[in-house]
Image (cartoon, rainbow, N blue to C red; front, side):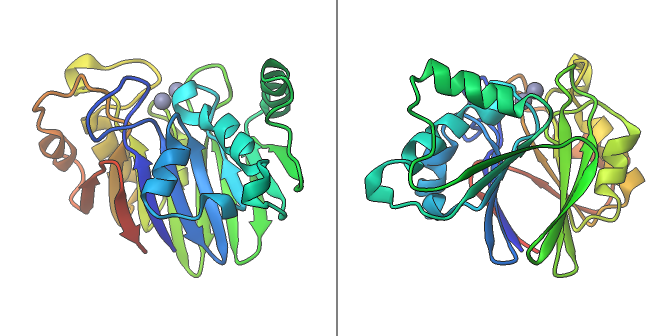
Length: 250
Ligand SMILES: [Zn+2]
Ligand SMILES: [Zn+2]
């Protein structure tokens, strides 16, 4: 399994921190976790096969996590791309309604052509797929039913929180994970409901006993803060602060 953080930031523009998106190659599939604005362009910039995506897993419907679903669907329907295989999109309840409303707003221009689009709404479940499995857990973010995803295949596991506050489910999600990707939105001194701070990320990673903690979703409010120092108070394992295009092989 290998993955690339395509965006380590949020909705607010920041250097090296674009909106959320993670490309994962697992089994024989090309998978996307979240699709914030610009994700399609960054897939191309990273030399990744955006036209071959098999599945997209959305954590929730804030625009910094899902806006480029429309761009991807629009690109895949163009004749030059020659898309034939189906695309499966997963997300919390509301996915079908979101798709229909977007397609109406865009006058039908994101409806699939030449391939099948399959939408699956998920909450707390396990999806078995060719060569790997995906577990979903409800996160504590807002009232949109945000979920986190855990991908397990070839004896390796990758957990991704999406956006969340501290909760038991996020610890479960990251339990003994080979890679635990946690949102780290704001400094300890600027705690915001529905998001995590560096100290909280450290405590969650220690409780989950993950092998490698990767922090992402940095708001530009971080200005020279000692993020590592705060995480290290609780967690001593491997630690990476993601930037756009951080690559990890598990
Ligand atoms: Zn976000
Ligand atoms: Zn959010």
